[in-house]
Length: 315
Image (cartoon, rainbow, N blue to C red):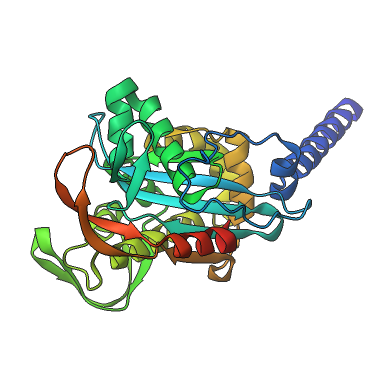
């Protein structure tokens, strides 16, 4: 009996030490504060649209930038980035700023010239496969916004649908009826739970949405928030470690470590909508010659002063 009690006490002590270590090392502010953040891309001063530096963060407010990429493929074929979001995270304040980048945004791609921002990924893939696709996309966004990119997460259509289904669907509120052109169907306004297949249809629809691509970007932001909150509900956080292998299959590519993802789960646990800020890229529609296609195409032409303001306020 004494041996059994001693063994039980040992398990409790070891468990307490492990729990204390996890609390100490994976607490979001401490985890990201104490590690050397990776830097995937630094802005090239020769191509930056908004070159003035953003206000320097306080020493106790270490932050980092993530590029979210949703590529327009079902498998491993070369693909453009159908969804691009730059996300700024301040762990100590549990703040998340999201900036949607329209896929038709006219930007300068290093070694290519001016083209659509979503061409960067497929141009990189053509040059050197998946890794080069990621690097060219991150470098292009870094140059355009004038900020470093520390992390990225990339998925495709099938991976997106599986992630949504694993969190039990996403709850979305549609303020207006949404007509899905390619399905010739209408989703009535209101709040409902969407499974992965329907969520993908919502975030890809731009022709049937009032407001076009801007309405589509806003829905993408809502889906991203809903996925984060749904996956990281309190009852699911303890299970996150066991979910990581399957989540990594759905996320095609990322440089987040497992410890990073668990720490992010802690960061998002219980976070509310007030902790998120969302912005769309200011600009105008227009036609310009595309360096890749060699012909005149429709673009979203960004407003330089507006981009500078977003950089200062969101990064």
